[in-house]
Picture 1 (tube, helix red, strand yellow):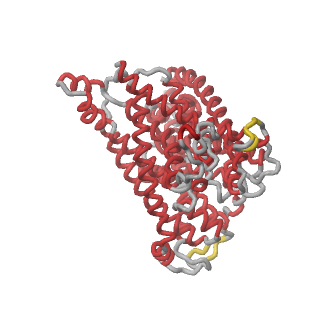
Picture 2: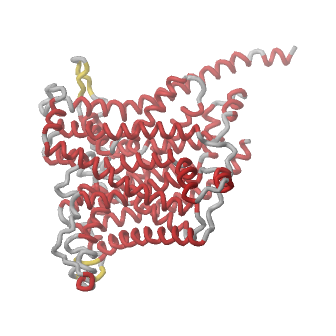
Picture 3: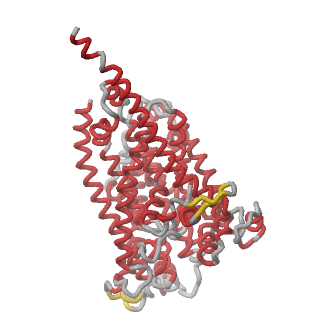
Amino acid sequence: MTPQADTAPLRPAWGESLLSERRLRAGLLILAVLWLVCAVVLPMAQIAGISLHNGQGVWVGLANFKTYFTNPALSQSLWNSLYVSVVTTCISVPLAFLFAYALTRTDIPLKGFFRGLAMVPLFAPTLLYGITLVYLFGRKGLVTTGCFGFFARVLGIDPSVDIGLYGEVGIIISEIIFTFPQAMLILSIALRATDARLYEAARALGATKTRIFFTVTLPGVKYGLLSAVFVSFILCFTDFGAPKVVGGQFNVLATDIYKQVIGQQNFAMGATVSVVLLIPTVLAFLLDRVAQRRQAALIVARSVPLIPCADTWTKLFYFSFCCLISLGLLVFLGTSLFAALVKVWPYDLSLSLIHFRFENMGGGGYDALRNSIRMSLYCAVAGTAVTFFSAYLIEKSRGMRSLRQAAYFLSMAPLALPGLVIGLAYIFFFNAPSWQLAGITIANPFNWIYGTMAILVLCNMVHFYSVCFLTATTALKQLDKEFETVSESMGVPFYKTFFRVTAPVCLPAIIEIGQFYFVNSMATVSAVIFLYSADIPLASVAVANMDDAGDIAPAAAMSVLIVLVNIVARNVFGFVSTRLSRRSQSWTKRAS
């Protein structure tokens, strides 16, 4: 009788604790949805509303869009953006495919070196690509002058001839360098996920290498290829840095937004161009999501890994190709470093650190670099915590299907939002002292955040949120849901399971998320160009300001410092991730 008397009162208590835990999960999910609504939906609704009003705040409907599309000087920017994006994608994706194929499908040497070098452009602001092109192909460029006249006579180079750097040529070259590593990463993953049995069957049927490539290889990676195409298109279409430096009179949508807002203070037209910029981006994003869903349905559980090709001539071809691409990147990166170190280009080529003295330069100097590091650290810590815990609530919670779907949709929405549009939307949303809703004036409770470091961190968190969310979701899906089920049956609160099991096992993924936030926050220009203040200068914005002032060498020097900080951060995060991955394996065994 005693055991029954002891256990009977526990059942209602356990049921009440389970009910309260589910209420807590639901409350946290609601908070996750609310923060995404406030950080994504409401600012985007604000910028859409501004585009329907004139400069005095009077409702004009679609008049701004009519003005935009009937003004050839403005509407031409849309076609220019589409043109450079399509051409860039058509060049960047094939180059990335061959490079990724060499790293994944062949047994060439120096794979680690090639991959690491190909990733370096991700660490730099896109402004650096344009600046380096000026040093290479400008009127006094290294290539244009035949290595400062040494080879001009031999090659027959005439420095007075304009090669058309400023315009679509310069933008396309810069965007190829920008999109190449990102397309290469996507295609590397797609090329790794293959089934060797398909190739064995094709060879057994007597298919040639060319036929195997078109009937097995390309169909097997078609969804990854489509993702690379859409990502390259979106990145090029929305980029601001490179067109600002080498765009010249060739206007694109991103620079139009900047000119309307900063140059003409025409916020209504700036909002209109932002909405126009969103339309192709959202369409490409939706097509990419459809492709990824179909790809997930084609994964074969019993696939056999493909052994890399060891054919001598194949290895020689791909090794030569990788060497050629790497040489181009080394020349590009080396030129930017050399330009930052020489005294006066191209007249005094003696090396000096004079351009790293930013005291008399606009943009904030080393204070801007310190602010960027601080902002990136805040973003890495806060962004990682919010992203991973939100992904945990969405992925590991049971029930609340509609709420979880809403949270997932909102988590993916930032992937389709250009950084320049997010920054402009945050000006309208957070800077407004009050809002008008159905004729009622409501004080803006978020107005205090404007002009502080917090809005810069929030903007970067939103800008890079979706990619980090997908990383966290992928890591969480690898964990068996039985952990949560067993914990729930034993009456262990879910937050204890999260801190004792889930977070330790997923530490490598958490470190990767933090690294992604830090590196991209250091390098981004478009997301913060509208939001920084004189009290909080940033390094990437300082590069843009120095370029505007004609201080090209100091701008290159600041860009080099950003790259160096990101390389150091990458190595530190990589070292920590390697150490924690070993502990993660032991945690997994203990949790099992």
